[in-house]
Length: 204
Image (cartoon, rainbow, N blue to C red; front, side, top):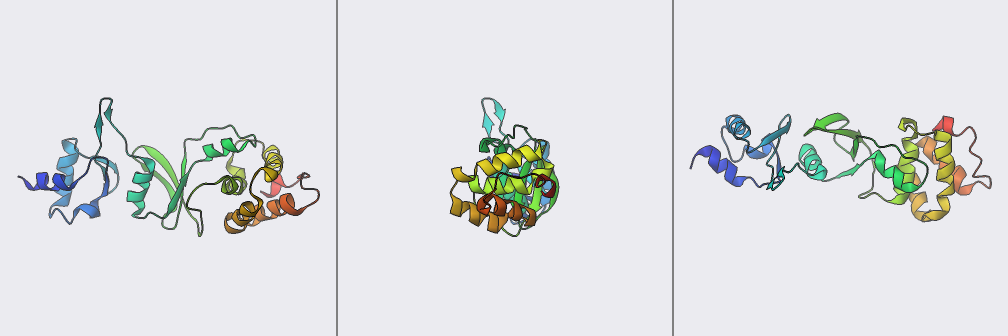
């Protein structure tokens, strides 16, 4: 068995690997990687990141977003989401975005991984999973980047307050809201005139 075949024997279909992961199995990792890419065994996703695709009746399957991000960060501590999930909140957002957002502690910037766009954002805190309460806070944090009418969306957010767990929402606001978002939710949650949001959209 050749050395490149030995390396291939350690790889699992569906796996995403960093170059550094493979140095323990090869003393000529760059040459072996070039050979495995040339023969179609591996696909190069970005600098130093490779994928061993699974074969199906419909062809080679792409890597899952979470697997790709985990290999890129070399870390499990991240939250993968997209602005499209705001559309499930019933606050008037309808746009579809070709963007995946990764909250994490290591990377910041726009990256193309395997032909997909990821926006990596450094955050001191983020939940382990997306909840309705977190999404409301996250939406207001990012309101200025959305295509919809900000004033109308904020009004609809205020109407959603009674449809979520208030304590969980308060915790999400405290943990994940920026300064302007906290001010908005303070009015939504505690003001007797919480539906009057004139002028607030300009603060978001």
